[in-house]
Image 1: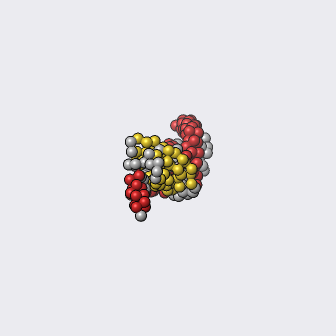
Image 2 (image 1 turned 90 degrees about the vertical axis):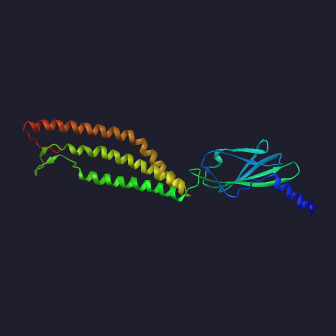
Image 3 (image 1 turned 180 degrees about the vertical axis):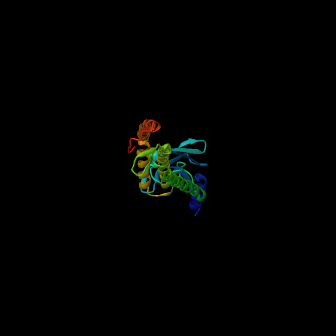
Length: 243
């Protein structure tokens, strides 16, 4: 009975590294944490219980006074979920084990209801702006004014506002996909959908310089044609065209 009581007392003073509540850590980043012990001379991080497997670490903590410091590589935190670090401490006579647990997610912090509301609200606002822009484009003319026979009567320069609005919609779509990818990474357990959105974002963002160049070239070509046609109209010539 005395031996059991002595073992319990030593265990209480040897290590206190079992977390009552989990901390949070960011996905794919290295983890640095410390534990304290009054009597331990050595502490080892033996394994990590990850969401899908047990990771073998076998890392001895760096001792500084009564503190043992650990540094775990980022590649051990490649999935979202709960990671419990199994630690074994010893004073050369008695061994005691404990756990340091972390919730690993995309943001590295607890996701509150208010935060999720803000993210989803921003996404809804961007989508509404895109819809409103689509509707606005529909009210703009898409060609020059023509008579019933299809001959151009006057040049409608208001139609050129459609091009910058289409560019705005394109970049707005990129922003929506980027935000949706971040929301999927933060809130969905399955990262497959988030990876798909991220791939679409990368593709659209990579194509954006080419699209801008094509739109600018098209703008100046059509503007030059309309300026030439306007000169005919100013001289009273109505050649008839499908410009």
